[in-house]
Image (tube, each protein chain N blue to C red):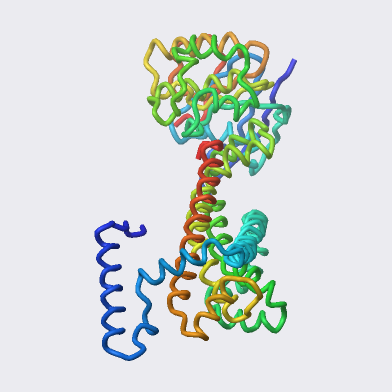
Length: 188
Length: 251
């Protein structure tokens, strides 16, 4: 069973420490990374994704295939939903239509995503991560801009599709995720 | 942005040109030689059109000048792609690019005449004029590539070819398009000048030179109109191809 271990993880920017000796184990299923803004949630995910190097500490098991929802949507603005999925995944998976529909998106919408609302774009970014053939998911505030109903749909789908793999979900709001283990950062 | 050519404005200037030519012809015994009228130039062009020598000259010049443009674009794209991630290569290419940008084209033409055959001159000069704007613009386009999309591509392990189509091309093509538009005008101007100096046989430049030697000002204007037309046609065709590529890449 795949697990990701971090031990004594440290990271600072310009002399300002953001992570100071964090140790945690991320097992299959959702683990919430909860913290106020600016206290290292995004930094932790970036370190695990290999986008930055830690100043100290050890990360084990994170060299796997990841999919992510970043702080920003990171979509190709001039492409449709299908074009964005094709870019990231190489093809539009057969299950994409059903998943998009469950997220309240129209799978046949061929408009470029620049014409979409913030909430729709966020859900598409989540769909892209959930459809990717990844061994672990890093979701950085995936519910930004979503109303209660859409948030609940997203939580349900993350639970369904994240079961067998570690899902790191950085959020400041644990509504609907009360049963998930929580790693707290930067408690002030 | 290029000023829009209004038909009334063009007609007014053609009338002024016609008036100037008529006035010079009336004022001096050989005044008509100094400035051929637009009607004379158009009639001369109509005479030239059916001749095989005309089309041979058009073909030879187009092949060399547009060939130089294409070769230079390919080299500029390659070197800009390599230099984007290699500061040492950017630094290495900096001085020659600055020199080519700053030195008058006539100096290069004369120097190239020492090195090359007259036939290769316009190709070389055209390529030389095209390289700096295309290289510098493409480099700038690559520099502006969204690092967040590159991170996304890295995390999702998106293959290089798809990265090029999805991230780099949409970013670089607008820069390349604007440089190509500028460079196409430059390469025709510089290429024709090179032919006038190098006199390769059966080219537009040679015909321009002959027109100058024999005071054939209608020929001079007719051939100049041909250069303008060729430059415009090649620019439209090339930019349409770039736009087609941009549409496919989602730029």
